[in-house]
Length: 178
Image 1 (tube, rainbow, N blue to C red):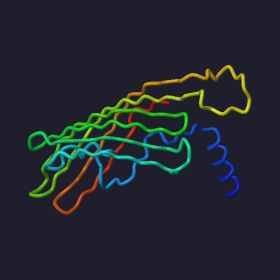
Image 2 (tube, rainbow, N blue to C red):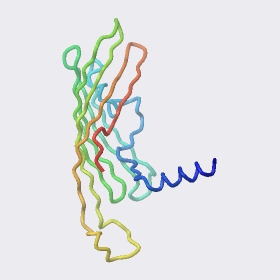
Image 3 (cartoon, rainbow, N blue to C red):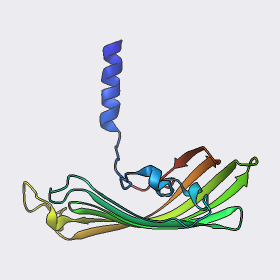
Image 4 (tube, helix red, strand yellow):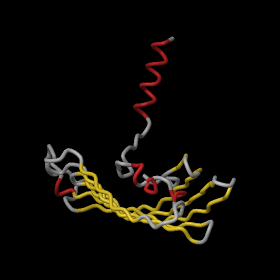
């Protein structure tokens, strides 16, 4: 029975389409949680403007690199808006995008608030086929130019916070484009 289940799981894994690394990889989430959760927009009494840079495998040509600039602000006592732009590069692949966020903050107690946020984003995915190193030349599917596609998306988040604690939950890529 165990062998049948393992075989069945392997077959299912092979016939389903897999997608990964659709979103940029960031480090230091504690320093800029807004990149992950739109409900954090307007959760502080100042305007945090942040620049984020991440370079993997330093010294290796065409290694993954991600750069972003973000900011958000409180509007009145209960709302927040924010946005960020980014570029994510890995060899012949480049993703560039922008996101705008809106959050509403509900007061649950004397020091506890719940932020609910929604963001709309737009990404441009580019593949520079001239940088590909192919085993066989002459494939008609490869144009050796730059293929570009534009993808809209949306994210939702919840952020519970107080003076000495916080917890958040975010759902990204609500609009699934392939």
